[in-house]
Image (tube, rainbow, N blue to C red; front, side, top):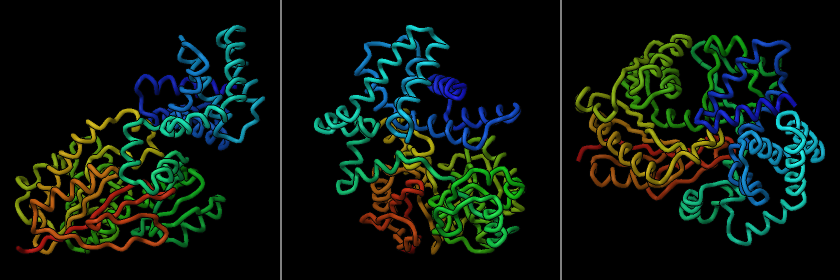
Length: 438
């Protein structure tokens, strides 16, 4: 019962504008100082319910508002949300969920609130399947799947054949993904560590492993920089740039630095990677992590990526990675609140920023050099449409085809850009461009 009280508190803080991942990390750190502390199962339960409510809040609120005229207290709504989430989305004992919900309500609000919660939850159990069937008949799949209608309609328009598959995939619980630092660690030792810890590999993409436990983050190997957190899509963006030892590389929007570090490994820690960001505190994190990993060719610099041509001069880099600031709709498994904080207006503003960065970055690529443009979003306005505009005004660039890696689900657009839609990997777009003489 105390766990549910904690989740209600976390949800209330989230409602007041705090980031979900920071909230949960701070909560777990605080609990580590207490005895006996949280078990692995308790951490998993809290994580699933907290993020699950956020992912599915539109359907949960629809289900509440259908049964209740108004709720004055936010904690009561959050209690109903988390109880309904357990009932509908988890393999839970419905009667047990109702009992716990009523007890929490009585403890915090008295007998009347307890009776109110009991009635709402029992009505939901009886009628939820009928509610969903009616919503589907009315064409309101957006509510059933908890997507803002503008976003649902956009994905349906762009991906007519598999939009439901894509949208359902982004409501799944994400798995942690890590890669080993090949500069000071090897796969054999890593696999041995997983066996000792009882951690299973769910999927492998190139050098990235999707595993079934976050316990790996508590190991000395992680703290020494021998293991790092990285998504497969992020790694592929770095891989497709194909950085070589001794080259000069520009990472225009580098924080949190995973792609710069991956490229440094590919280069055998030989050459130079200039890693830009507009936030000084993020550059300090990159400095700390590269030092921990034994990487000394990454040089963080505070700079607006739109100014790179003025700062560095024309044709000053062998290869350039533009992993542009974006709406983040490809990482909504990990950051579900993105769905509710971004609008089409934000997408249009970001698309302009992305194109400005891309145009500036193109000028510093050497003739014969490579530029990779990538985003962690799945909207064409930030991807295909932006690259189409870029190629019209930059005829000295041509698309280089990339081979999709084994074990990755994705498709190519008409330009040759890769859209990744995978139940494990983040949603990503990437296209490889070569600068030619014209």
